[in-house]
Image 1 (cartoon, rainbow, N blue to C red):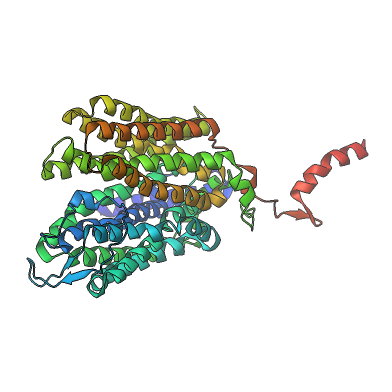
Image 2 (cartoon, rainbow, N blue to C red):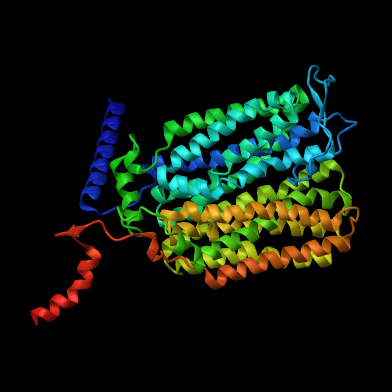
Length: 525
């Protein structure tokens, strides 16, 4: 009897809370309660795991290729395989060695170093083509289908990769190009989804979910190594491909384009999200045409593009070349090398999460402006690593100092989630996908350029003096990118983000009515 009374009072309490929530919705008095934001939490989790899977499908080949080539032909270590540099294809056709390995029955391929590098680099041929179109397509037809179907296709082509490799090197390269083509649209596509779902002062933390890609890479490499040791290189593609298919199925059942489209969202959560987003951009005012001239001539847009290009250039250079530097200059063994090379991945993700939370709290406190918040975190995430690269010139030949400087530099780089990374959602949420597509296209070229520069500078000349040149280039790139954003960056929503209001009175738009008010007042007087 006593337990019945307890359940009765609990039921009354929940009923009163529901009534209070509905009353708040009806009166427009929105008070955020974290326990009721269930659909937003699911979206955050799906995006987080989505970018982890995104990088699983991307980096599985970098470790699989180590086992795909026989030992007597294998000239690419696990660390070197992570370097996505491109080289001219060897004139001779690839030959396949149908030798048995441990476990038995696994096919090996006699690819030359040129052919291996060409396969690794072919991913970017497709990747760079779809960055900009992917962002625009997500704005036009929706981020949910663009992101979801891209990941679905990428998972399917991953499952087909072992068969393609057995057919010919050209079939394998086609799969890698197609994989890059599909994954290229995913990064810019997620910003339009954030514009529909995430209130302006909560977007920094959401952007940190995109940095889960580094966490995915840190997890995938050792897991794939275990799978390959047990069942051969094909298992790396089959397991990651199946994980991608499972994630895609969940995505289409749990994520929807807007809160209004979600069949299971509460009235309170939908009203809260729509009310908060409406404070930045009025609904129904999105221009039908892309304002290309305004975008291409906007200093704040180019501030994002240039800063992102500089930041990613530094990131790719350090992450891709760090194992080589540790091997030839710091003389670490392969076990120490692998462990220490993973530290920047982990550090950057946790810093990204921390910076996103702190940035959102600063924005909600309204103690400093949104523009100043973006610039502070961009300074921490981009300018500070440039200073650390200068320190690397003077202390980089010491094992302890070098590892410490590299790790701190990449960790601090994660602060961009509170800085420029989500700035496209500030200045033009309706065209944030296009802006991020422009930025990621430039950064993709930067990743290839960094590999080319380091290769030219250190080819057959692995000396500390040559690496100092690399460090100076990194310092200049980081610092110049940050300075551009500090000068031209802003968080104010730009005028061309929204077109004239669709509300009309007697066929006259609201803007025209506002312009006619002075004339009306002068006539009445």
